[in-house]
Structure formats: C-alpha cells, structure tokens
Image 1 (cartoon, one colour):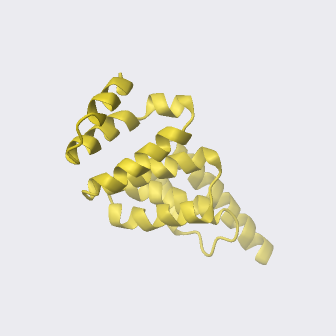
Image 2 (cartoon, rainbow, N blue to C red):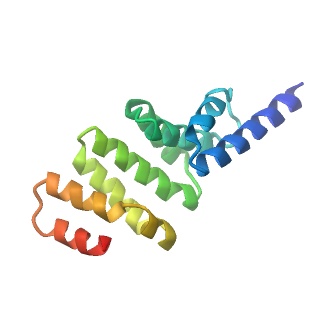
Length: 145
C-alpha cells in the first residue's frame, strides 16, 4: 500500500510540474494541493505551488512556498525561476528593494533563453525607479532592449 501511495504522489508531482511548465497553472494547482507529505520532490512541490499561487495573484500564499523551495535547494533550472517569481511577489506587495535583489539574482543565474523571454530587466528598471535610484533605471532599460 505504501508503494502505491508513493507512486501516486510521484505521478501527481510529474503531471503537476508539466502542467505548470506549460502555463496551465489552474490545472496544476489542485494537483499540487492534493499531494500529501511529499517525501520526494518536496522542493519541487514547494516551487510549483509558489509559482501557481503567484500566477493566480495569491501572493501571500506564494511567498512562503517560494522561500521554502529556495531554502530546500533547487536545481539550477528552477532556482533562477524561483528568484524571479519571488521578485514578482515582492514587487506586487510593494517590496521593491527585496524584489530588486531577487531580480538581480535571476539575472545572474538565468540561462540566456530565460533572460530574453522574461521581463527581468524591465522589472529591475521599475524597481529602481520606485526606489528613487538615478543611474540604474537607464542601465536596465538599455539592457531590456
């Protein structure tokens, strides 16, 4: 019986992760919520829950999940995404200084495709303007082009 529960959790995890990566977070969220006591992929479950909550605009639920995922340790392909999502959460909550730190971490560690496809530099520009910084907004605006 224990083996069945473990394989069911693994299947749910895999399905939820794939759905979330496809941008189908509305379908992934209930699957992730239904995973009980994940022994494997705990950091992945925490990341994808945070990602789905952030996508749904539920920032107060997203934040602890993303922080937990980062504290548990994520593979590099998810770590920079977690920093980006956490930056979005902080930005939405008005924490522009923390958001700036998370977006800078994303920029340092993201692969080239992600850096091009996401709006990291544009978000950094906005954070810098909100913080009243002078030189940095223009630098990030130039990088965004």
